[in-house]
Length: 146
Picture 1 (spheres, rainbow, N blue to C red):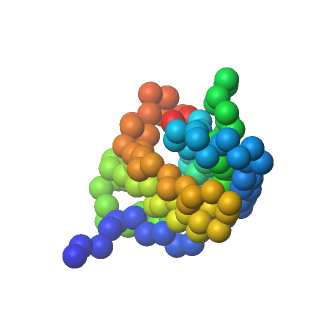
Picture 2: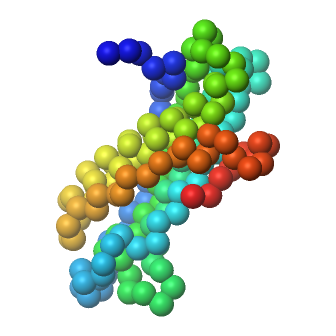
């Protein structure tokens, strides 16, 4: 096994809000509701190999649809280090594709743990990719909507 050039130094949940729908008919709702994921990247001012990355997940009711079993608002923030020996031109794309994926996996586990103890079946978030974030159209974009 080969070590990744991306190291997760620490992470935390800065927001975890889960509401169970109070309408029993929500059990009939297909899917999880409307899922929105936003990412934000901030490079350290003094050490360009260190980054703070946040992932915010919101699951809400779709317009005109019944309430999903769970509404969510969860944010995780991670602090990452990119290996100095990793090619400079590949550092930012690699971080933008992989750091949010690491955090999203933590969010998925948190959501599964919380909703497994709720009144409805456990919510397993879908698998997502952040590869498109590796080469954003606007290189100065600090936040991207998926």
